[in-house]
Length: 207
Length: 207
Image 1 (cartoon, rainbow over the protein chains, first blue to last red):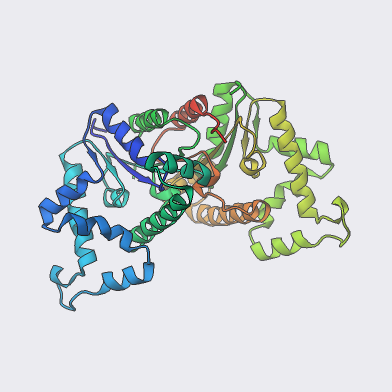
Image 2: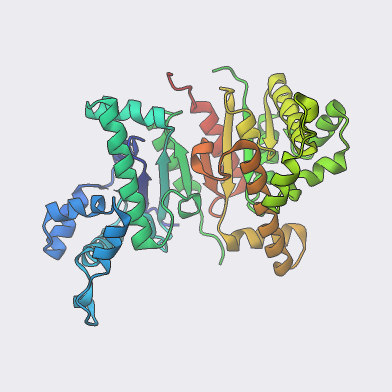
């Protein structure tokens, strides 16, 4: 293993995954990509940031998203891809490019799947029990419990559908990640340390 | 938190979960229960060990297992429970008793569910990619790849059905465990160390 460390964080809404990602970036002193990724994708592809921001949430309705995503113009070649597919492709290229450049932390955006054949990548899934996620989200976003519950349901549904559509895998299923952690029982800081320790002892299986 | 540490290991066939459990018991110098649990249950309940050994594998066929498990004698009280349910109850009591006694490692037997309200319990799920599990099982049990594949499929199916029937939860779903680890990428010894580290920083959420 080289010293290069790429850590992808997939996370349930309210689990603190983004904070863990930021803490990891600070501790390892490497770039952190979440919303920051959108600027890169936008620069590279010309797609406007706002449109990309909404892309994942569109997948809240799995059927409509699949329908819209499947509607290319009927020709062969990249021009025949639907807008959703071209957005995903731009995201794919940018994430591969960012990972090529060096160590980094990437939150969300199917990065675990996009980097699944990169030996330096460690894929982490962060989740928590519902009451812990609600408590954290109410404190963090300052909205009511009722609003948090709705937002949590919609966001996680959209994430799961978006992931399923583009990767053919099930979001949150352990086998897609190297390790999965319940954030309700240990501090953000301790979780970051555990993940770093995992990357230090991780090896590539002999295949 | 007291210094008492109870670690339950749930594991896919061929993932090395049993070895990880043993290593944990050695490192922490605490009792290890896997097949050893059967002696305890047998002593406590009078059920014969061989019958208990086969109980989980019976669940390979989910429908027949549910049917057999539901067939009590129609009366109220513990006497009306089916044999499968009485076996599970004996297992339940013994696992609670063992956890009461002090630190220990328990492999399998729905121990995560049985001890879910015990603050000292840390529930771990060990899994791996198929090719890694096959490789490990072929080496460990000295049987052919074809046999391992069949055994793996049957065993994991039985474990999942048995767990679903008795706990109402989905086996292997992250939210049932504090952490889940892919054993294909790090050594047994390092996994044991990571789990110990987790138990050291684990806290009880404020509820």
